[in-house]
Amino acid sequence: MLRQASSASRLRIKLIERQEKLGRGVAYGTREPRHLLNVRAINMSGLPDDPEHFVRWLQRPENLKRTSSATAELPECYAPRALYAEYIEQLFAGAKSSAASPIVFEQFCDEAVAVVPYERGYKIHLQDGASVRVDKIVLALGNFPPKDPPGIPEDVIAGTRYVRNPWSEQALAGLSGDEAVLLIGAGLTMVDLAVALHVRGHNGTIQVVSRRGRLPQVHQQAQPMKPILSEDAVPLTVRSLLRRIRLAARENNNDWRSVVNSLRPVTTALWKGLPLKERRRFLRHAQTYWDLHRHRMAPETAELVSRLQSTGLMTVRAGRIVTCLEDKDGVEISVRERWTAREVTFKVARIINCTGGSFDIRRMNHTLIGSLLDDGLVRPDELGLGLDVADGGRCIALAGNPSPGLYTIGPLCKGALWETTAVPEIREQAAVLARHLLSESA
Image 1 (cartoon, one colour):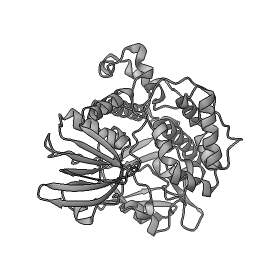
Image 2 (cartoon, rainbow, N blue to C red):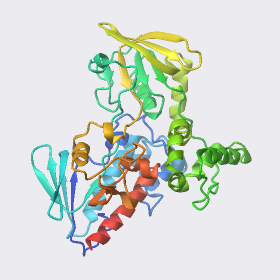
Image 3 (cartoon, rainbow, N blue to C red):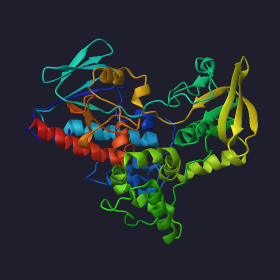
Image 4 (cartoon, helix red, strand yellow):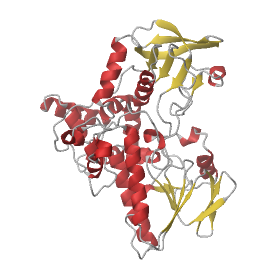
């Protein structure tokens, strides 16, 4: 909005955020240089109307030396996430400094705990007891910690050896270099923790357990191709959609990466075109495979994970936890393997939940979301993936009508849009929503 607003705008933007540094969140808050972006630099511009903006920023000498890439390689490189955080920070600072003079920007380093309708707008109550009056609200709450996985008893969850939030600073604190660790979940969050352990010189075993035991696929060079499906020809079943994807991969020499990449511009249309029953079927049977092939590891990260496995420092199992007993020396875990049904037992010093963010607001322990639900200003979507939203991110109230002036953006829109967690999608959402809010203000 700061970039799009004109000098004629009588605009006051109030940003409420617990952290003083903006734009980092879960993904880019890491300080570990080996944590890389999972998307090539050419696709990570923060400006939808300038796709090469991030690449040009990387070409600055002070940034180039931190990418370990030659200038010619920059568009295809996977830059450190901490470096990308600095890019977003500078982008935001530039937008503030160049904003038209009548525009007022205020930042509150606090947490919103409740929203109450007030006159023609809202009053937002903050944790420190103060309140902020606004006309419109955008909920940009990002990712939420995962829910506790099955098989972990309450006494272990309440103890000191279990970590619910893998992104917290305490996740690896106090862990000695030779202690064994259990990472529950085998996705990109687990990969981040494994990389962080390796960088710290950790020599203890890393046990990884997930339902299917499959690691994310690896990014490789893929030839661009036109979408294999159009918004006007959406398959009405998950079975027919998967059949079309597999056929396209065979027709393209099994280059499935090109096929999956080609679906990105039409993914939301495909999702919306599926009947509710088929979306539920996708979540039950196909979501894991989509995530593995859509959300991939950078090649350098994949090499490190492969090395950890080949040296025996990391073991990945498909299965479920059947017993979990804690004593003074650690936690004894028994896992029933998915394919063999045999039980494997091992002992670890710490358990870290890496199952990915939870967005079922019906079961979420979040003060602000709870307040919005209690007051009927929002309602959960039918799939338990976030908030029920109309086009443009407008929140749907409990009564079924849009809540006036209440919007959301990012992961909480997953039930409506599906692809809504990566920068290319979020920057488009932000630009569209900013134009809408400015037009309403005018």
